[in-house]
Length: 313
Image (cartoon, rainbow, N blue to C red; front, side, top):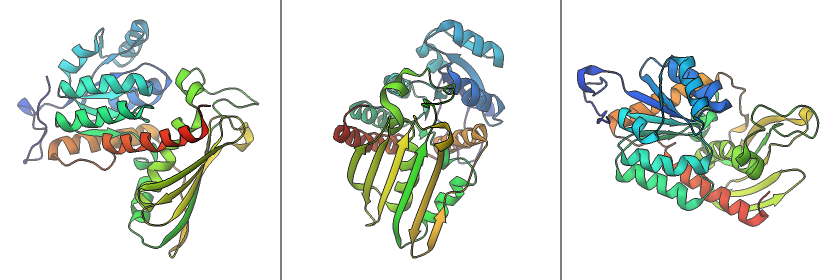
């Protein structure tokens, strides 16, 4: 059912001016807490239906939001103009290639894939089939962090930056989080789960990564030392296994403009709605977004290099 959403008049570009139909792939905690509520609340699109690898979970989620349940992802692609993914990265990637071939615009989760060839295949498919793509990188869509990133990217003279994202998904003390049952997070750790968030801020402000050095610490801790095209240096400390009292997120930039710290943020479903806005805007205008599948593939390349230096968790 895919149509070109490009419209000089600013309307939906669809027959009868109808809203774009968006389908969801995935039924886990992230889909329940963020994707599905945000899709249902979005006023610029229609939440069309759900597909999941566990049919009973897909039926339960679809029933909760009053949408169609799909037994086959290709049937969902045929009915939708865009698709949103809440799947493990290496399940997401081949399905995203199929969705792009069906003409669906792509709202991807991070990382796009943990395999470089798979990540590049998604970006190549989006370009080849001329579909829009967005990777949902929370800090780039949440407020006030998204605005803060744009403001810092407009400044020159950055000298260095330090980031930490220490999650207590698998804490040595306390209760594991709702995401602790995720096999890919257990296997890949904080490097792959929260590394994209840190890089999604460091790269637009300091430039692409031209050199990387990675070391492992306790639990799943990975420390990155990066050099950027601007000449600035940065560090990032990443983990999903921090003690509960040590968990937290922070990022600090230092340079000619002084010291600037990443502000706090909230309202993740709202951020997801803004990511969908960005996807639909890119689809209407035909202008690629800087947070697209190509950027997601670049993040995978950097993280894969870090993993090659340190070995898997």
